[in-house]
Each structure stands twice: as structure tokens, then as C-alpha cells.
Length: 193
Image (spheres, rainbow, N blue to C red):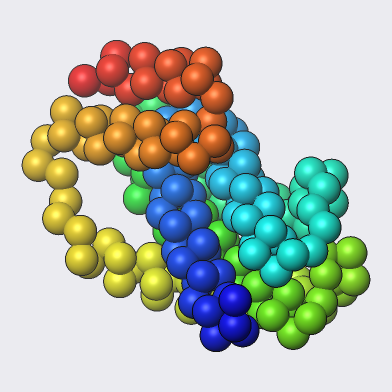
């Protein structure tokens, strides 16, 4: 595979995982959304490592996600605001997908560019990568907003719940959620209809 083909494939991997993270961010439970998004990001790193034929270990991937993305105060706040009855869920569902998608985009771009230059996950300078990540976040927000403008909004609460269930099913199929996690989250969404 040529370098140009690898770049195109890495962009595809990042965009796919950005979409998965948008769905994961819609999980209505505070904290569960962050765990799901982190799982999406870990899977993205795994696929990028495979594409560039570099070693990947879950612990290393978790360290990279934690060190670069961290507990980002904005993401944590958007997740926790879902705990506020009524309005909290609405606010969380509006802000969390944008923040999670932008974060996934920024992390993917940061790591893919390092790997494209011949680096490995083991030699990734986490301090430098964090700075690059922070500059990529703004571009990620624009990408997510552009995606949102191209998608029609659901017409009702039941349509929104069905869309969320479809996104969860995609995440299960991609190996991000287990069968049991999918069933639990699906049941919770169904009770909201």
C-alpha cells in the first residue's frame, strides 16, 4: 500500500470512528458515554496501528488516550450535566456529541500524522502530541458541525431513540460494545420512548 493510500485509509478510519463517537456520546447515562467514547478511540488507535504495521497494546492505547485526551473538563462536564433531570439530558445530548466527535477527530489526526511520518505508538511524544491535539480540536468541531448540517434531524423522540439504537448496533457490530452492553443500553433507550 502506498503512503497516499495509507493516508486515505487513515482518514477513513478516523471519520468512521468520529461517527461512532457521536453515537457513543448520546448514551443517556452520565459517565457511560465517556467510557464508550474512550472505547471508540481505543479501537481507532488499534486500527491505525494495524494500518501502519506498528505494535499495539491495549495498555499503551489507554495510556495514549488518557495522556492526550485526558478527562477533558468540557467533555466531563457535558457528560455529568446529563444527570440533571429534564434539561440536563437535552443540554448533554447537544454538547457531548460535538465534543466527543471533535476529540476523536483530533486524537486520530494527531496519531495518524505521527505514524505517517514513520513513528510508532511507543515513540509518540505525549506532551507534543497533546499540543497538536489541542490545535486539531477546533478543526474537529468544524468537521462534526459540517456532518450535522448534512444530516436531517429526527422528527420525534421515538425517531431519535431509534437513531440512537441504530448507532449502538453499529458500535456493537464494530466490536466497540459487547452484546450485553448493547442490550442494556438498548433497553434504557426503549424505556425513554
